[in-house]
Amino acid sequence: MDLKLTQQVIELARRVGSFIDTEASGFTPDKIEYKGLNDLVSYVDKGAEQKLVDGLAALLPEAGFITEEATVSTPGEVFNWIIDPLDGTTNFIHGIPTYAISVALMRNNELVCGVVYEINRDEMFYAWKGGGAFLNGRPISVSGAQHISETLIATGFPYYEFSQQQTYLQVLGELMQQCHGLRRIGSAAVDLAYVAAGRFDGFFEYNLNAWDVAGGALIVQEAGGMVIDFSGGSDFVSKRQLIAGNPQISDYLLTTIRKHFR
Image 1 (cartoon, rainbow, N blue to C red):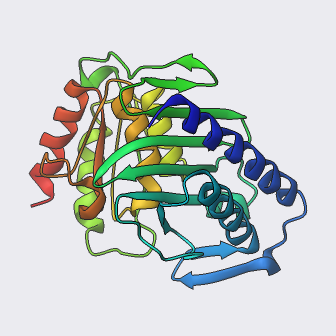
Image 2: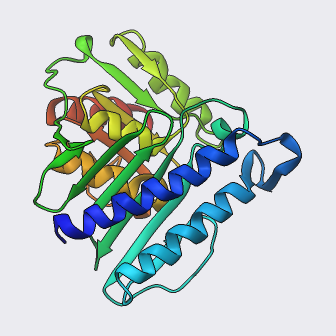
């Protein structure tokens, strides 16, 4: 994929982001729906997804879709768009201004285009395979931190699947004694974008979906970072677990996590 298609996705994300921003001002709790325990959705998620699907289908008619809100369920033979129309829905519903649109394009099993639009800061993170990573037109790269003692690490807390809760807390307990701090801002797409821009030095989370991470993962990779699963492999989408950062910090997080997640 190339810059031209990525720019078209960026323009679409801005339009859909404007819709989300407009709806945020009048959103009330009676508009919340529940997909499951603590798994929230609203007409804003669904409307944004439909707009993205319509726009992306026009850009690449042969592509299929993997979407959070199941607007369509038509996988393509070669190309698939992976969409999270509003990553950080719980933040959005509670009026916390950190949420994003995430769009990725996968060719066979390879990510080739990624866009994460953090709406409230009007920050557009994007990358295409072999083209580098950018924030609002400026090149970005992952942190150069070499030691865990100089890092700020991002993560996400379990909110409905708690079987690994104690193990997860053990990892947090070890890391919080060694780094500058741990942050949980409520959007994996934003976490990954911030890793790509060097704001976070590393990120890890489990029980993630493809639409949470696909766009941001490519941006991290094109910004010079590593994205791996908890066994050190590259199967972070299907295993639903992910570590991201520069090579040194990713390796440290992997070693720490493998002590506890067996």
